[in-house]
Amino acid sequence: APVKVTKICCIGAGYVGGPTCAVIALKCPHITVTIVDLNQARVDAWNSPDFALPIYEPGLEEVVRKARGRNLFFSTNVDKAIEEADLIFVSVNTPTKKSGVGAGFAADLNYVELATRRIATVATSSKIVVEKSTVPCRTAESMRTILEANSKPNCRFDILSNPEFLAEGTAISDLFSPDRVLIGSLQSQEGIDACESLKQVYSNWVPQERILTVGLWSSELSKLAANAMLAQRISSINALSAICEATGANIDEVSHAIGYDSRIGPKFLKASVGFGGSCFQKDILNLVYLSESLHLPEVAAYWRQVVEMNEYQKRRFSKRVVDTLFNTITGKRIAVLGFAFKADTGDTRESAAITLIKDFQSEKALVNVYDPQVSADQIWLDLQEASPLSSLENIQKQVHICGSALEACKNAEAVVIATEWKEFNNIDWEAVYAGMNKPAFVFDGRLLVDAEKLRKIGFTVTTIGRPS
Ligand code: NAD
Ligand code: UGA
Image 1: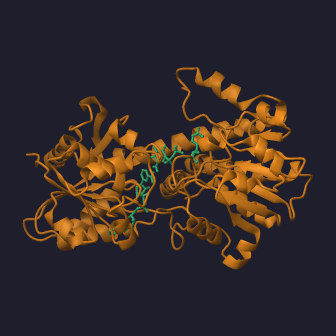
Image 2 (image 1 turned 120 degrees about the vertical axis):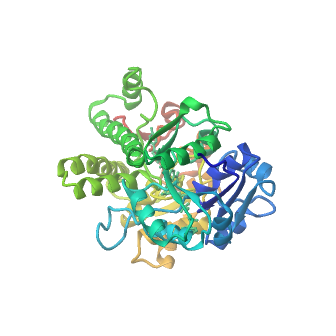
């Protein structure tokens, strides 16, 4: 029979584990939720008395304020939380492997395996173990083998797959009213019971018809498939934006026109300087690797092209900046507005801004960066990682971090909008223009600003998906 869950442990207090389990705690006051992580600084931030949480997400602070200390706890005591829980989410990172077999494509499952082994070592009672991280198809099988090979007598482990579909910047509203919650289980009686136990947790706020239950492998593959299809839409619209720039068509009008077809739908058709974020590229490469391992090279090539188109879009944009600025940006100051991979997050993983700035650096430009949420430390870290051969000191000769958009644009030749922060729409563009060298250029990589309005002020405006 299904177990009534009263204690949940979540391993991994990151962008997914933190918000997801904080919302579970908020919506299920009868369940004690403990989120654990090995990273002491991260746990301290979750526990900080003034709620200086480790991630920026609209609405998150309010959730944590209501639940923390009531039935929501953050801790580095991983073993204790595992031991006490009846259901454990594994929500650790699964980055792309940097070396060894499958380097550059396959998911690094080391963190998932370490967490799984820890559960096997510590548990003295039966547990439902839920794979929350995004993993290659059939990872649950490996987890089960590890757990069963190391379990104590009378300890049963049931494995579920419950991938997360939240998007950063809207995580809390996505969690409050998800399009769907997906739970995969073995189709044995025990598997179906475990699935029912987790379903009861979500049923505290998610309508029954939105909780989908499927087989384990379908669940794992659906997560990779959803991200691949979403990223494919962006690469498709970005490919069309190149045609627009060459022909005089306007990508916004094209998106609008095709999005009206109810089979296509209007969402996720915004042309951009390229998608970023920790998952799209990683998950597609993972799918490419899976396809190749299954001897399906045509399938692998098909999905790989989505990532290649994204690289092309970023390169094409920085080349357009150089071309427009009379084929050289050496010694010229370029203001990059936005460093996060999208608005309403402080996350910079795989942000297009990093690639653009790196391109500008190699053209020997001077770069001023401003982002309302990303810390200076994070920007330096990302730029160093992008150029491992230059010292921080050398990078800082070319790049300056500024405290406001206006400051970043001062004495610049060009403004590049890399992230669609709303505030970039509301800056005093007259003042920006007055402070810039002339002719003053704006490159809108996000279809954000009103180009006509800026042209009236005197700017030369270049927009993605529109001819110059
Ligand atoms: P993250 O790096 O922000 O968080 C992972 C955390 O796990 C880190 O704080 C790390 O210290 C901790 N950790 C690693 N190994 C551990 C261990 N053995 N014991 C305890 N803690 C450990 O990653 P994230 O963005 O939260 O992503 C987690 C997973 O969710 C990934 O598989 C990702 O693909 C998937 N996902 C992410 C998003 C997103 O928007 N970021 C959305 C859906 C799914
Ligand atoms: C994405 C998915 O939307 C989530 O469903 C999924 O759970 C998550 O990945 C994950 O697995 O990590 P996220 O990366 O947080 O979420 O953000 P998105 O809103 O999907 O944006 C990704 C990138 O695409 C951003 O750089 C964004 O600016 C860009 N984008 C998005 C566009 O260029 N055009 C669009 O129309 C939409």
